[in-house]
Length: 115
Picture (cartoon, rainbow, N blue to C red):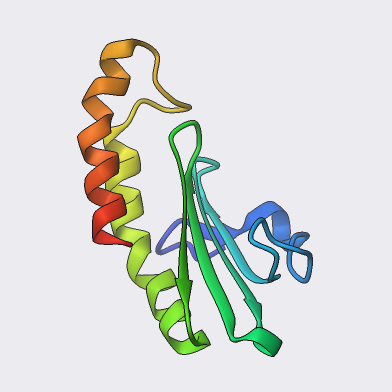
């Protein structure tokens, strides 16, 4: 774990080398306080690179790239924005309809920014 950032290997790294949710091989998989997750999958045989970010109970958002350099840059650059968004949402998902309505524009803005 990187004590400076709070990000660490997801589930101690057991997911590395396995198949990811988008069909690639998981090359990086990191979590933040059991609330946020970033996963990088690749399949070089088909120039397939995807970074999937998640906020427990709120968001799963994949981003597709043509090469590893762009995907890995996105992986790192999304961390602060994901932390910021996660800090504004009730932990674990909406507790009421009002929570969901309030979060809608925040989640949409994040998806647009990182599409």
